[in-house]
Image (cartoon, rainbow, N blue to C red):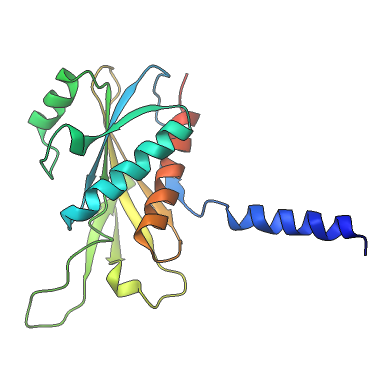
Length: 193
């Protein structure tokens, strides 16, 4: 076989290995503007992981040509409430994206009864799913890595939208965050006009 064939095959395999394994699960596209200024907030069970998620998403947003900042630079609150949305709007943001990563990062059970870290979460359209946590999947060959995402428009007439992001990455937080944030950025970019 010619040498060129092997070079092309190696290139195809290398690009395939870089493919994003995450997909956004939503019943509709989210409509936004190129001029929108996003603030990205990660809700985590372990606060030390918040900066990892928000920084990964900001990088993905910038790579997609979107304007975004991490929420940890603007507020320390772990939960997003109406006062947080008011604070974001006062700071000039037009969109707030909240990633609920707690399904992946629940702390070890502190109960005397070892039940495991599974729980149910409602996703798009009211559908309920049982979720295995990040730590429960360490030995899984195809781990379930689903997070829920809420988008709050601050300067438009759009309604908030809930969606989910699902992936099957290597079970490493930085890889999960990078993959899911890239999928979200591509989803938002596709809905811009």
